Length: 291
Ligand code: HH2
Image (cartoon, rainbow, N blue to C red; front, side, top):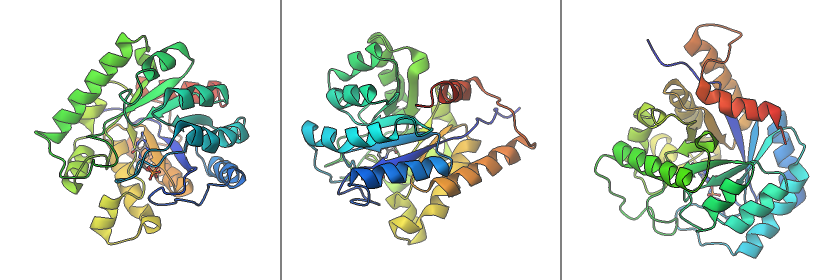
């Protein structure tokens, strides 16, 4: 029997940065970012992921004060907008202030390795955490990345980071996992991870997939970042079929429609009913605390 199909959750990206790879500068003004976030909620985003530091290949780190200045007014302006709020940060002080402002998810692309205070912070606050795989750090991660078996290496890394999180008091039910598409990976590494995603899903926690507009889609299609929506959706739908449940995207309306139709088709029925415990954890919290 094939695995149950999760209820897909769409996480809309709100980049409050001058230099993000696909929309840098578009939402640097807080009012523009808030309006954008509200629009993404209207389009069907159940989570908004607000970030103040680009992690694109070659990106320079951003100082804590500047990151706080970027994300806090936006999070405050989006509290109560109808979606859960996630903060895309690897700094504990930024995560703490974001939680105070209404965030209930910490999306840490370093998987708690970037700041020694982060694990304790997450353990002590009422929030979920997304642990993502990255080889190296953004400034250098695309310089000749190498793995033994990329899927085994990423799976083992995520299992170890999950153990680390639990050993610091983070409840396992609070943990989401992300293979980190594009973070220290060649195009073939990305494709193999997506093709064998069920091996990451087998770790038993909700899997987040962030392929949106990324450069491997441009390599395959020859298209510029804003024109990679169809490529993004192809990867999202295939990831759903392999058990991924949270989809981090820039183009929310299109991804939401595609994922709803894909979920109904994979189940062979409509309306669909919730079918997995994995998704229950993200859905229940989405419903019970739509911050
Ligand atoms: N990708 C980016 C940033 N944060 N978080 C998770 N969990 N997974 C991802 O794949 C992921 C992420 C990069 O995308 P974007 O935010 O659009 O670009 P930039 O880092 O240049 O701001």
